[in-house]
Structures are given as structure tokens and as C-alpha cells.
Image 1 (cartoon, helix red, strand yellow):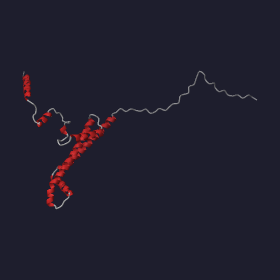
Image 2: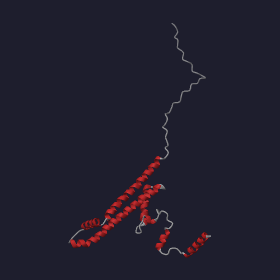
Image 3: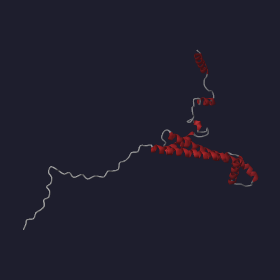
Image 4: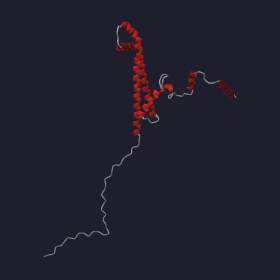
Amino acid sequence: MASNLRSDTAKINGAKSHGPKSAETRAISSRNALKHGFTAHNTVLLACENPDEFRSLLDDYIAAYRPAPGMETRLVNEACVAHWRILRLNTIETSLIDFEMVRQEPELEKKLERFDVGIQLAVSFAALADESRAIALISRYESRLHHIHDRMLNALLTLRRMAKSAEPIHLVRPPQPIREPEKIIDQTNPEPACQPVIEPSK
């Protein structure tokens, strides 16, 4: 009886709901049934990144390594994701230095009558290195991602070697020497034995 009451109550409450109203709540609702999220769009790409560019990079990896379905495809995907994140770090580093150069320009104009881009770049890099951990962190993350990238590709090669060694070996028999046919002796009509020649007496 209680279970029927709960079921009826759930139906009534469900009829009152018209789903999430805003885009944010709809995005949250869309992830309600997400079990692991490995294939979700937001596990790799940031909102500012171009999905077509990532797809192009992934297509390049698939064309280069031609992975078999299953584990090989997963390893190639992981290598591609590591490469994508390395490219992201390169963008972050470039943008950080560009921003710092703009920020340092007024200070350089106060201190120096004349300076070139090289001085501006050096001062900006020194400021980032001394006052911020960003550059050091980028270097550390990039090294880690390179390690992951290489490890995935090495695992792919190891997997292929293991699969190749597990293939059945087909032994090729060496060619046999050609034997000359044996001479068949006809026993029904044997050849007469050679008789000694007796010379007549003189």
C-alpha cells in the first residue's frame, strides 16, 4: 500500500515539473546519467577551444598509427590528448609573456629613454620567473605531458609486439633433395650373364 502511495506521489510531482529552465541547469541535468565521462566533450576541450581543430589532430594521429579497435585506439587517443594539452600550454606561455610585455612597457619607458623588444622580453620573462610560478609550472606540466605522450605510444608498440608474437607460427618445410628414380630390374627376362671368350687352341 505504501509503495503504491509513493508511486502515485512521484507521478503527481513529475507532472508538475517542466524540466530545467536555464542553460546552466540544463547542462547539469544532461550529466545526471553520466557514468564515467571519458567521452564527454568537456573532459578534453575548453570552452574557448575549437573542436574541429582537435578532431583534425585526432584524425592525423589515427592516420599515422592506424590503431585497431579497442586498446590500441584508446592509447592513440590518450597520446593525442597529451599533444593537445601541450599545444594549450604553448598558447598559455605565449599569452603570458605577451601580456607581461604590455604590462612592463610603461615601467621601461620611465626607466629607460630607449629600449628594444629584446630588453622588453627579457624584463617580462624575468618578472614572470621571479614573481610568479606560472612559467615553472608550465615547464613542469609540459614535461609531464611529453612523458605521458611517449608512454602511450611506447605502450602501443609493446601491445603490437605482443600481438605479433602471439600469432601462430607457420613452419615452412625445407625443400627435399630430388632423388633419381631407382633402376627397375625385370626379373622375368633377366639379361644373360657375360660368358668368357675362349680362344681356340693352335
